[in-house]
Each structure stands twice: as C-alpha cells, then as structure tokens.
Length: 291
Image (tube, rainbow, N blue to C red; front, side, top):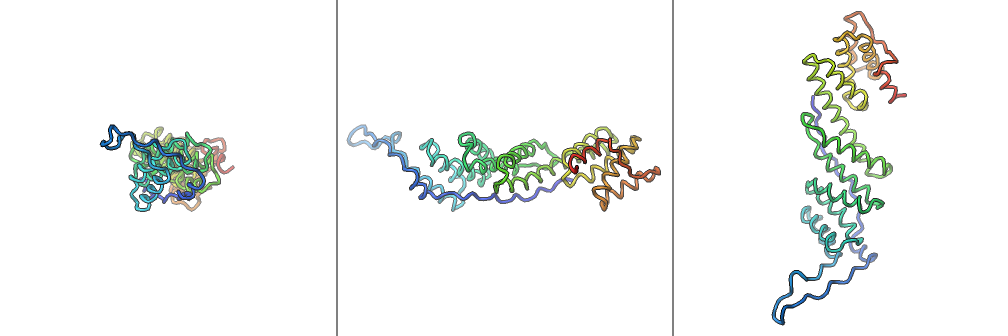
C-alpha cells in the first residue's frame, strides 16, 4: 500500500515591506556615469548605460508577481541582486526571487537562491523563510514510495532545521506538518520493501525493514502493521518470545486495531498469548518514546 501524497499546502506568505517604504528607509545609490559617445552622432554605448534604480526594479518585480508572472518576476529580482549588490534592496530581492522561483515550480533555482540568502544573511529575520522555502522545494518533489527516497530524506533534514533554529516561527508550524508527511513516506518505503521480503519468506530482511519503522517512525500510521508483521516473521522463525512481545506492544498501544486482532489470533494457534519481554528491542524502542 503506497502512500498517497497529500496536496501541497500553500506556503505561508511572508509579509514584505513595500518598495516605497524601503525607499524612505534606504537611500538609493547615485546613477552610474552618463553614457559615453563615440562621436556626436553615435548612439549611447549599450554596455555603459546607467543601471535602473533598485526601487523601480523592485516595484516591477512586485507587479509581475501580482500578475502571477513568476519567472519574469524572479528574473527582475535577480537583476537587483546583480546590479545593486550588497544593498538592502538586493537582500530583500534575493528572498523574493527564491519565492518567485518556487511559485514558477523551478525548484532547483528556489533551492539555489534560498541557500545563497541563508549563507549571506544567516541572522536575518527572513532566514527562517528562506530555509522553509528550501525544504518546501524538496518536499514538493517527493516521489512515490516505489522510487528512491533521497529527495524525501533531504526535505526532512532541511525542514527539521527550520523547527530546530526557529521553533516559534510560523514556518516551523508549517514545517512540522510536512515533516509528518515525509516521515510517513519513508516509513511507507520501508514497509513496501519489508513486504517484498516477507512474501519471499526472507524473514531476516523483512525484520530489518519493520525494525526501522518501529524504531524510527513510531508516530506514523505504518507502525501498527510493522508490529503485526514482526509477530508474523518471528513466529515463522520460531522466535516465540519476540513474537509475543510484538503482539503485546501492539495490543498495549493499539488495542482496537485489526492488526492486533490478527496477531493475537496468530500466536493463539500455538497456544500462546501476547506477553511483553521488557528486555526485547521492541519493548525498549517503545519505552524511548512513551517513557
């Protein structure tokens, strides 16, 4: 049973100061020198035209965003970064470019520009947003459980950084929701591979996969099945005490689960009942979370 990817949540929008307000706070630099002329009748040298004011470029970028022309908006903000480097305009434009690239679904450029922003301005109030954008871009590319989950793992790392560095921010709240989905996806991948091994009666390989789910992804929806499959694997191998422990832990945490009813019936065929061995790795794994 593969994980159905949830629709991507809309990004929490950062409230940006309008360019006109910025203009009052940060004076614009002087224009470049007047264009040179080869002679009285020649046109201006196109390589020596004055740069457009940052305020004008920024407002043009905002207008393009309002028209949902995301790629052109990103390019307009990147022009500020190029022509007015090391200014407050460039600083704000860089994170706006990352956001515009995200809306254009250019995830690689989203990641590139958000990473640049964090490297250049790690203490900025917008650093949390840039970090979140990086994670959102990775998250939005999470593949089906049948494919390699490297992208999911990278999304998890970046999003967990948001919750670690900025735990009280609005982006941490949004990141936690995505972390839950990413963890569920990784657990789903382990379950899929575990079932593959179990169907072929390769019990050791199956146990290793289910163990990962029980040890690392206990808060996901897959843990009930993982405990039931462990009961099945251990019974097949004749490791009765671990089978009883898996069933007991399953019953303690999910007493109304159909997986528990099936596990109880399975060990009952051998005249056994669920019984937890507190020295078992299964019992210890759950004590780490609940104790």
